[in-house]
Length: 127
Image (cartoon, rainbow, N blue to C red; front, side, top):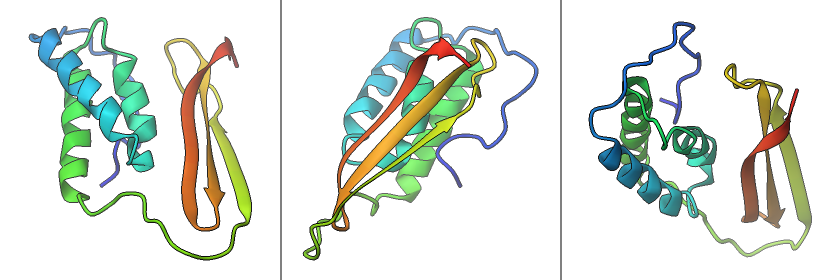
């Protein structure tokens, strides 16, 4: 299982979610959790973009992420002793958001084998 669906539904689901307050509460809690779980950063970013007008399909994505988290409770940030080589990796999904054609980029920085910094952000320009 992955934190977010591997394919996007081509048919837009415009049915609004019945309890937007619950959606925002859960999405906000996920923002705190991803501080120690970089594996869910992209999915949390995608879900939080829908906080103003959540739809039923957005809540389904949120529930999928919660199921992923419950199955991976032992994931986290391990701290190990070793070399102090600093490495940074970057990536972007070229215009994957079909609604506004903006890319999402991210980076992660390691000190030895320890993850010390990461970020996922939607770019401001259209690809």
